[in-house]
Image (cartoon, rainbow, N blue to C red; front, side, top):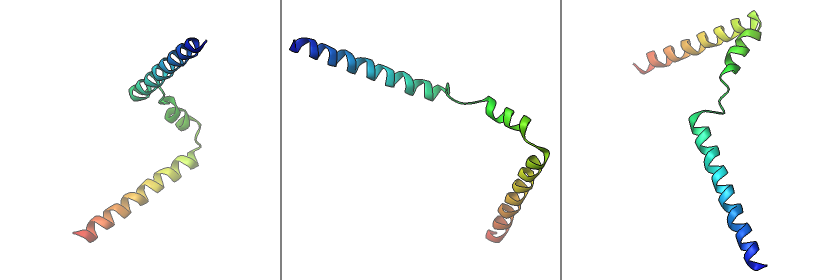
Amino acid sequence: MDSVLQLELIVGLFISFTLIILFVASAKKGNFDDQKRMMDGMLFDSPDDLRSAVDKEKKQEEMRSKKASKKS
């Protein structure tokens, strides 16, 4: 009976490590990245949301240019 438990432990550990290795490899390849999320978000955003996002980017760029001019 003791050898059966040892065999189950070894097989269980082998399967667990194999699954962990497969998961890490898949994550590194980008299989879990949601590539359609950005495109779907753009399709369903209202014009006001898009306009406010553009305004926010402009303000951030202005702040960066002000900081760069102060450092010079």
